Image 1 (cartoon, rainbow, N blue to C red):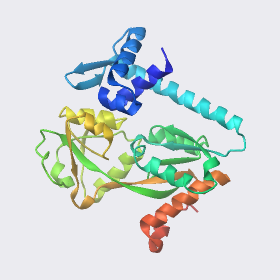
Image 2: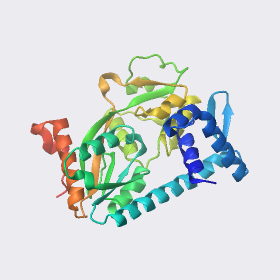
Image 3: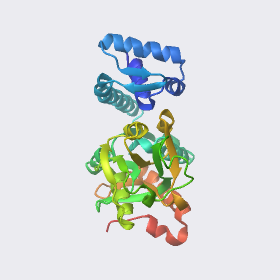
Image 4: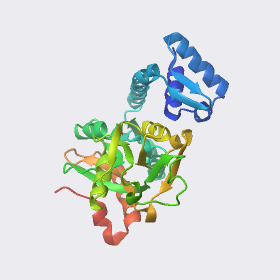
Amino acid sequence: MTLQEIRYFCVTAEVLHYTRAARLLYISQPSLSYAISKLEQELGVPLFEKNGKKVTLTKYGEEFLPYAKRALAELSEGTEHLREMKVPSTGGISMGYIYSVSFSALPEFVNRFYMHQGNEQIAFRFRQGKAGELVEQLMNGTLDLLIAGKPDMASIDFIPIYRQELYLIVPATHRLADAESVTLSDIAGEYFISLNHETLTYHQLEKEFRKVEFEPNTIIEADEYSSIAASVSTGAGVAIMPILPILDSFNVKKIPFADSSMYRDICVLRSSSHEMSPEVQSVWDLAEHISYEMTGAEDKQEGVRNND
């Protein structure tokens, strides 16, 4: 078993599409299939099963995935630690992020940070995970900063840097599949699939629902958006989530809400009880600048919450 095979497995498990996974890994599809097959032979169990063009994880694959992800994360953390030891004068920033910002908000934010002279010597240590777990790491000092949804905790300061529109996701055969836009009243009574109640997005949506006295008939709480999309594609219910590449792997339709009324603010978060290093302060300053651009000078103070 090689680390490369484990990485191939994790990427394929994320997108559930061999061609797309091979493209993300910059290898041919036959090479990916061979690596997965070799890993399955060594483990003695099938990790994926195919039904036509559809690829799903087997029960063995679902059980193995968390261990594989953890192994890669530990290796990445160790590699970054050695890099910092080699160049001790280089400042380091430990930044967490949720999966759904890895395709837009995170790369754009980091690229803008490195555009400023002097920042090129600052290294990031990135950690992806569930919002609840990352918030705990932020509070105990394991993480310096976190890019995630807006929190509702007095001990966390936040600055909004990106507004992420949310869409209604329905099965391709759903009665609303061809609708140009929808409102929450259009899905009253529908079975609802959501992220689990420990996520920031869950609580943000809950607030929006209360504003219009909408009570979702939630039947499934999932840990990841890929699980939500898979459940929607089977006809189990509908969901509200951002547009992510994973949706292309499933037979679902993405419908905007009328007047773009459903969205969430993606923010840079920090613990108010931990002092910021100069490197972390430079990232925080960039977040304030981006927030200024988003909201305008006249209401900038509403975009940045300071917990006095």
